[in-house]
Image (cartoon, rainbow, N blue to C red; front, side, top):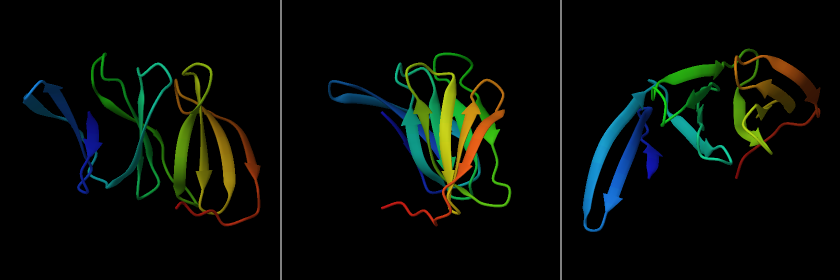
Length: 120
């Protein structure tokens, strides 16, 4: 079980029967607004309240890598484009939808839908 705290800490709870172990995986120093696993559960996207998107690979080094950072408008949400783990899509508060290469954060495409976006 992965979850985040308001302070920007990513936690992992390993639950086995009535026993559990808690581990701090990362501290990104920004409140995390959402966590999204890739379809094959190898990459975890972390979206912050301040508009940054990070990747976390639990099975590899376990390091958090900043993929995207808010520029003129904060990222409101992000998710993987399936099938596979090569691309993600994000949307900003101002309504800009962008497709990103997860490998290095290259913006491949963007479209402005000219509407303010909200999450419920």
